[in-house]
Length: 316
Image (cartoon, rainbow, N blue to C red):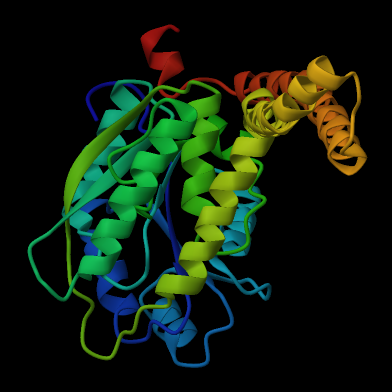
């Protein structure tokens, strides 16, 4: 990087049973970022992942809580650096894109750069995963008003202030979704770099379960929407319930004005209960929105407590 003090770069590789690929992955990133420190965070591997990573000169750490989200939480808590580059240990992410991602983040003072995947090999990315990625990306954009091209990419560069302000509450593969929403909600400066997505080497198997992990991701999106957009979330159910109550009440009002009687007491009681619940949901949305605003301000202050990337050199 031109001029100034070079940033400390940490390459973070979460791994689970990746003996077939971890050695080549470490070699690939060391070739393009020779001054970076490479960390391999092993997640209870039962093969030779730890042995091979150590022999290749990586700093090996162990995380006993199973799940990528748990590994990310540990990585972000333990490692100190100026720039964090995270990828998988299966050699599916092209190391050649790493210098561009790091330079973009540092020179443009961004907080996250996402490596958007473009696959040329049929084995690299199953068709169902392509459609699922597009569907979830579109859903995230609809719910939060904006999104990234590839919200599930695990190839990302982060600033120190992003890493140290990220709450990391996920346990599994839904962590990338949480990362994307964290950046969107705090309106962080972000960027994207197109990168090739490669097929796994022989002997390496994907740990992603299409249906169970897809369901976990969907639940995470719903939870984040409820937490970050409480007025819209609770307001939707309040409006729906109140509209249904009005629909059911119309015949009651017609009968009452015609006869002066309310013959269907169960329906009247149901309508009254639905209206009360709708009012409670609306008030809940307002109260939770106040709490959410306070939480967001605290996260923003935590984020601002760290300097922007390259701030010393730019005089920011």
